[in-house]
Length: 163
Image 1 (tube, rainbow, N blue to C red):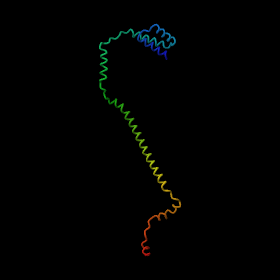
Image 2 (cartoon, rainbow, N blue to C red; image 1 turned 180 degrees about the vertical axis):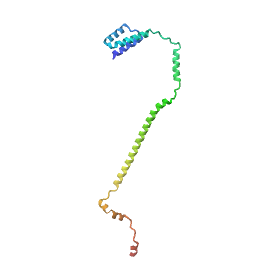
Image 3 (cartoon, rainbow, N blue to C red; image 1 turned 60 degrees about the vertical axis):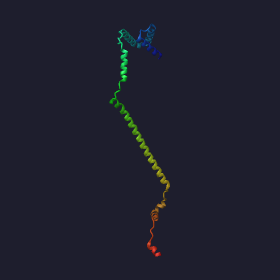
Image 4 (cartoon, rainbow, N blue to C red; image 1 turned 30 degrees about the vertical axis):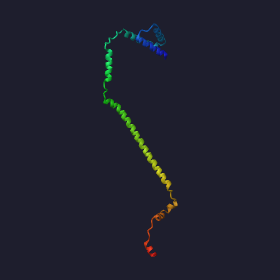
């Protein structure tokens, strides 16, 4: 890893200036150990030499002022509220909100149904514990028992004879 970092530093030095004799010797040693990197190094050296032969570009005297003015103009420009931007941004958010609301509604509905069924089960349990089931003998005489529980009307004729 340290070898690669050192090689990168040598390459970057070659971009900025001509390598010293010691640096060139290190590069030759590296290329002797790694012959597959020779073609890349030769192409990079040729490119560096060609770029060094180019004349420096003339920069206008007000270059810095123009760059700073462009930056200030970019910062001061109001951001346009674009429907396309909002469409692509808002649709996923609205879809996500709809999914969350739907799941919340379904969870609430499930909770309510569970609560109602639990209440119904409690009521049924209370009813069954409160009144024991009648014995089979009582059910055989159900008609007679039912007649006995009905209110009896007084027999007026019988009462008149007894007086």
